Length: 469
Image (cartoon, rainbow, N blue to C red; front, side, top):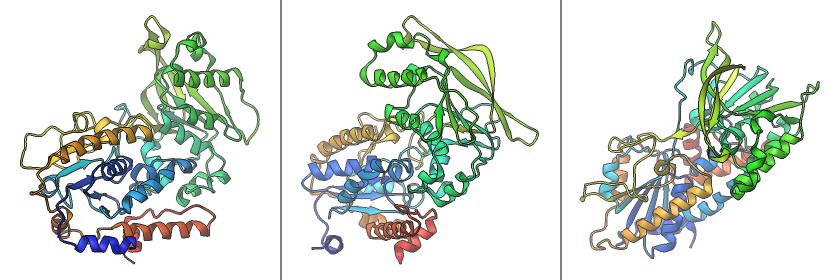
């Protein structure tokens, strides 16, 4: 029986006496949880609701275009979505098209995995200045996220600064420093390619408030950066004073990363008179104190506070500010200090950017509504790589399996069959998996015309049009 026919038979069959599970958010956490639930429960129906008409969340819109191997997990997620007891419903917004209480009334369990979609602010003077860009918006812009397609960014300057030293910060640096012909072979958006091809950037500073032993980026991302064509990495040797002495005592991942930095420091790259060479300049022990602007509110630089380490052992020292200040002259700055989640529904409580929970279970006094769970960055905060999200999603799904196995099978909920009555009052453009497959095919075809893996649709209305054609 074909996938489409199987879905049709399933949806028209009498309501089954099996647990009805709703997952809100079709990113890695949502799909990994669905994967675990379908493997461990003999009988379950899973409906995945997504705000956008397309699935995969951070895999589609967060992974850098020059990291196609990371996106291979989409193949696994597709197999999950194509199972007869899993349904994808896109273009549904929690808190607008349907509220949390309605979901909990009509499902046996509700899992929230809609991630962290807002940028953390520095909270310093002139942060709203022109050309102070959130790294999250820049990533969404070059990856085709509809909300970021109109981002205004001026790359006509020589110097940019990235505030933060995580993997996203390195992604931003690498995209800005990679030769344009190499980017043309990826699925980066055409509007981003057009702007990047006109870039006049020559040097990019990567600013961190702590030292080399505390950087948040991983060795894979640093190795890629160090190998970039026509790009030299220039370190401040003073930042690495006494670091070599503690290397033998470091845990293996940190040890390997630190050894790679030290190896690069010892290569002692210098600035040369070559118009084709660009420079990557990581600097440590600096915190942004305020953005400097000209009369037109255009960014002209950043006042940095110099920090120092205090404590007995170098690897465990704390970073504290001093009275010393420095000026970093630049006309473009990226804020890359982390993400936070939004309150998608009036009934949700967020604390420091995530939903408080106990091993994924959201504490709730109501016994009349379905149990509420949370997984991924919405529950843990924006930490770790995709592997970390997978582990967390599996852990929460295991708790859900245990709880669902104890439910009374005589009182199953109506699931999406009932929920769609509410949604359809304001939204007649729900996109199912077949609709996504049409979008997917269209994007791949558009990409082939210009020698790329795909050219993403960056407009929600266009996505709906293609999906419903």
